[in-house]
Image 1: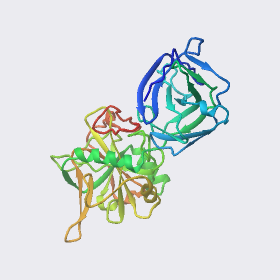
Image 2 (image 1 turned 45 degrees about the horizontal axis):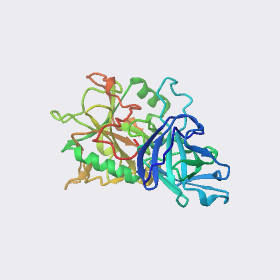
Image 3 (image 1 turned 90 degrees about the horizontal axis):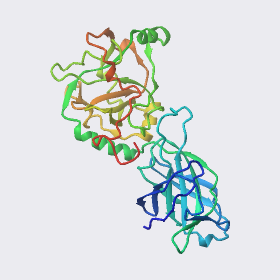
Image 4 (image 1 turned 135 degrees about the vertical axis):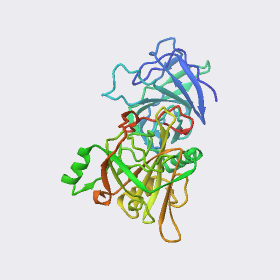
Length: 377
């Protein structure tokens, strides 16, 4: 695929740039970055005859691709050889004004039939708002370009990870999950005030709340799924939960069968790390037929509760349920229904409150090769 010769630059409808083109091709699309304004010697001349794209439509949006099409005046349509697509992350008005801004992206595509698919994890991230505008261009005999005016600016937002992307994450997590250890309880640490409020204002129940933005940026449960976080990891030498916790000095603990049984479904939700050697796997337990179950069925890969590499529930010959968890990952288990405190006990832990290990709104390390896949982070 040819790289268009753009003298100094192509002016952008949203931000100025400078003479630089990266030859990153994908089908008929190339990626380049630009600064500066049009000048007489820039190698790009403006011609009124070239039609300006109208009525731009964005469709088939995924976490790292979208389709784009538009209407054009038929005049001089046959002269169009290329499209210039100006793509920028939508500016966050609350962002730190001293923070380095994202480099705007110019896509240069040959004039193919519309709609055209734009795909690329190096410039598209999931759950991110973008602006897009389009020019038509005609390559001249000397290699320069004549261009139309820019179209109107359209806004759109990329999607979450699909089940295909989550399955890729699941497969990477399987590699490091390690051997299975037996466990018998789920537990949740919080401050004393949390449990006092549950008793006094919530009819002795812990209620589901919306999951925060920790983990992968494209996770379909962040900011959407309601649930209660629990842990089940045990210490290798004792077979019991650790006495340290980053979330509070009081621990609610209940038998594992109260949350996890053949009456529940299990889903894989995420795999991430926070610039450390520790890796986290998020699992969701949902009572069959519940609203949480229906949410997960549409978005998350389901796991066999008796045969998966992360957390299992199996029945012995005498009817007793036996539970195991993966040794080499930290499991964060979300239960999607309210939990009555009468099902377990609340007691103060003897260890330390290790705040540095908290994963509340923790951002995933985008450079980790163990837990990232080749889509937007």
